[in-house]
Image 1: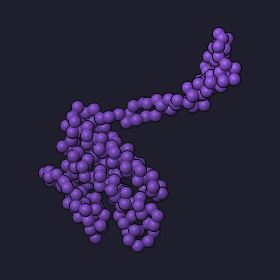
Image 2 (image 1 turned 180 degrees about the vertical axis):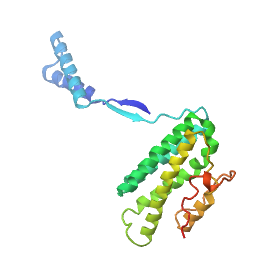
Image 3 (image 1 turned 45 degrees about the horizontal axis):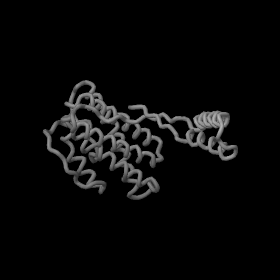
Image 4 (image 1 turned 180 degrees about the horizontal axis):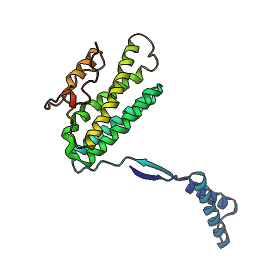
Length: 230
C-alpha cells in the first residue's frame, strides 16, 4: 500500500476571497493596506486549512514483480477482488459477509506472494483465470438475489452459493498455506466438475480455460467445490 495526500484547494479560495473583499471595501494602494491584505490572506488560508484539512488515503501500489505478465494478472485479479467487495456491500447476511471479507483478505495475500515470487504463476494461473472470476460472478448472482432469497428457486440458488463461499474460503486458506510452504497446488484437475455444476444450476456458461496436467483431488483444495451431494 502507498500513502497519498489529497490537499483541498479551499484554503487558497478563502485566502483569496479575504483579500478580494478587503480590496473591494477599502482598496489597496498603500503599504499599510498591502500589509493588512497579506495578513488577511494568511489568516484566511490558516482558517481554510483548519476547515478543510488534508486527507490521507492508502492506495494499492502497482505490482512490481519484474514480470509483465504476472503484473497484468495481479492487476486484473485485484479488480476482481474489488468487484467481490462491491457485491458484498449488497449482501445483508452478516455471516456470509464476514466469510467474503476473509476471502478478499486471503486472496490479496495470495497475490502478494505471487508478486514476491512470480515463478509461482504456473501454480496459480487457474486460480487467477478461473476460480477467482468464478467466485466474483457467483457473488454478483448472490447480491442480485438479496431482495428475495426466502422462497423457491432463489432460495435454492442462494443456499448453493452460500455453501460454495464456505468452500472457497477454506480452499483459499489451504492455497495460501501451500504457497507459504513453497508447495505448489494445481487447481485444474476438478475444473470440469465445477463447470458442470454451475451449468447444471444455470449460473454460468462454459468458460474458456487453459489445459494443464491433472492432479488428484487430495492435492486440490477446490476439488470438492460445487460437487453434487447424494
